[in-house]
Structures are given as structure tokens and as C-alpha cells.
Image (cartoon, rainbow, N blue to C red; front, side):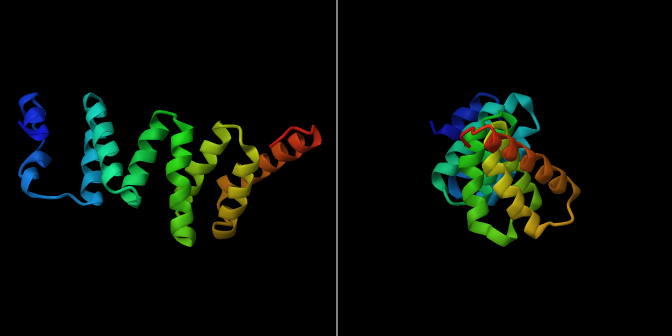
Length: 155
């Protein structure tokens, strides 16, 4: 019995499994399925398994990196968020959304890596200079970095 047949026999009867044996999904389709699964708390484990499998098959796919990062944010796994999002920011460079920057900045803050968060805020400010949230974050992080440097705390 295939894995899909096992899932269907367990009562997981989602329409995205129909014809799956004869079709190879692309990363965008996998991401969409995961997003759908994440709307149902009872499907969280299946969503995580599919996200892990999708990332294993498509390790450089932006869709797979982003959905896995989103799951990591929900789980407050800040190391994973950084591992997944930093390559995205590096790869897409100037096309990075303000939300992508904010997710990574937040992850750095949660890990108390204020220096890295501040550097990234400054980078984001070059692209989004009018964003009020970034301006506030820039000021607060600058204060933190200065305090830590003043107290000779290793950053």
C-alpha cells in the first residue's frame, strides 16, 4: 500500500491526493496544499510532514523555504526561521518583501542577536525608508546595540 493510500485509509481524504500517483507536484502546489492543511489544527502534523518532504525534494525552492519558515515562526523555532529565511533574502536581494525582512529581524530579536537585527533593519531601510515600523525598530535596535557596546557586552 502506498503512503497516499495509507493516508486515505486513515480518513485523510483531501482532494489534493486524487491522482497524486501519476503526477509530480511542483513547489508552489505543495506550498498551497500545506497552507490549506494549516487552516485545520488537526492537520498540523501532516502539514509539517509535507513541508519537510517538500523541502527535501526542492531544497532551494523559495516556496518551500517560505512555508517551512512560516511553520517555524508559528512554532517559535527562531533558529529554523533564520536558517530558512536568510538564504531567501540573499537569493532574492532587492526583490525581498518588507515582510520577509521583518520576519528575519524578529527572529534575530528573539534570539537576542541585536547587532544582526540592527544590520538587517538598516539594509531594509534602504529599500523601505518610509516604513514607520522599520523606523521605530531601527531606533530601538540602535539604542540596544549602543547600550551593549557601552557595557562591553559581546554582540
